[in-house]
Image (cartoon, rainbow, N blue to C red; front, side, top):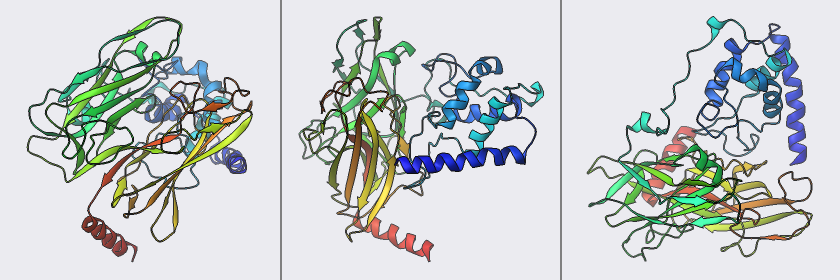
Length: 437
């Protein structure tokens, strides 16, 4: 892994002077930098968000020019930590910078970060009003907004897992085409590590419980998980999740103290299909573990880099919609592979520099979401760095095992799995072969 990173750094070092030679004029903020910030950065870096600074104007951006240079060169910002040399590379929500964009930002900082001609400045990018929903522009106002109870997190203390219950006000079955979740205030983002919205409802042949790891049709499972870096799920056409009358949301708000008391709650926006419209496929948000079925096998000795693995068999043909690794402070990397029934192995995705502060969800583009046959084994491998080389490690001399606390560890991937029929898979395979020929 280290050799691969060094090779990419060397290649990029050659790329930057090449770009400089191709264009001797110094980049300017108005002409060259602002369009990049609008496309890749301003969704977070604007007033009223949890980001530490706004990058909407030249005056706001100029003091951070050197820091921007360092962060983009090391690919820490924007937060997109997937290895670009292996696995699937086309994503619906790709916010990473291209090599050319990185080179432009570096040259701008190295040239003194000039403003340029104000006439070159693009029109300001428009965002939802304060506390507006991100998906409202695409779907209109949400059909349902569900809220957990408020909870006050004290200024100091141990982590808290707040688990209230909220009724879903439906009198008939309805299908969900998108969900969006958030803390209700900017301050709340400081204390919420993640939020789970488990769906409790009476499924045919099921227990009515909500196992986060379950993709069994007898269980409703998890409706959505929120964390910094993941705000919503949009289900593909003719795909969705089912809500039944009498359903409840069983929340889990993982809260931590930040030095001041903050009171907040979580909010879940639900966008429904029109009444009577029923998608063909149902999606299940599934936990693919990389540490055994319960996490009990997660064993990270002091001053070591530990590897753990998990295997999961697809009970019928399925499409995997995304890849979202989840680990804590010692998380280093995670890979998801598919072992097909013929024995061949396909690398799906590999996050080579995981960052606990960004639980980024990598949503596969429509034509690249892997369609896999029945019996495929999903193999998830996780690496944890419990050494002094990990700047996020609170104590490299401490043994670490599985646990809910931030100082404990986890190792799993959240994946939306859409199961399809064998006939539909065979038809897809025939179309794919025809395109290949």
